[in-house]
Image (cartoon, rainbow, N blue to C red; front, side, top):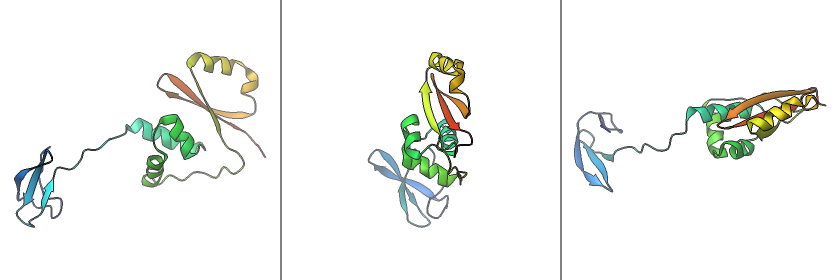
Length: 139
């Protein structure tokens, strides 16, 4: 990773200044600031960010989304704040979800009683499918 400027003053007058804990250290000649290369960190795929936000908008709690996707509820909460997502008011109902394999999903949908009087969304998660269901006009 090539460092072009000082993170403190953004001046390009920087020189190498040794290695600390296996990372290259730099020195800014303008502001006399020592710094090392930024951590790259762990990046979560945008696919999971989108899925988490969709599930949140569908009425699932942060803990439920955490159990489904395996991503911390704190991380999901920070995404909600970062993207300024507002959940529409769903005071009269709470969505339920089930995770199926393809054959199980086909069997569930074949039974007409499972589909009457409810809204239904099916989304893919790798080799499984998640069905989000909520009852219409529930009071």
